[in-house]
Length: 157
Image 1 (tube, one colour):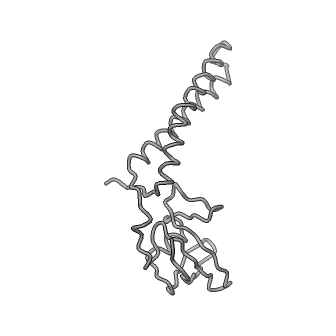
Image 2 (cartoon, one colour):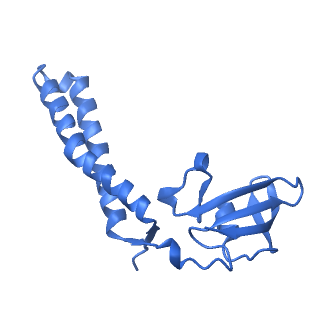
């Protein structure tokens, strides 16, 4: 069974651009580095050659991962998001029951998650714990420090 990745159009475009950059710029750069290292003589004792070949392997792995991701992607239109409950692409404002601290997160796919931008993955403990909850519900989230309870304050786009 194929597991789909769900992305916004913005996230899809960003990943597609990264893939094209790796193919059009990354591969030629690695090929040049390998050629330069090869020109320096004995390959059995050439650390630059080994490093360039390792970099090539890592680049091809990254390209393969991105191609696989884009091959199983479903683009979600924000205008179709149900705001009656917490779901993918929602902005959800939560209040920590114990500390009374409030924060707003946008729930996104793993590949779009960026904590600095307050975008958390639906597969993260908090994201997963919030899914399906409605305004006023209490979400219990298991963390390494124990269970934390959050009240759902608002759901928006």
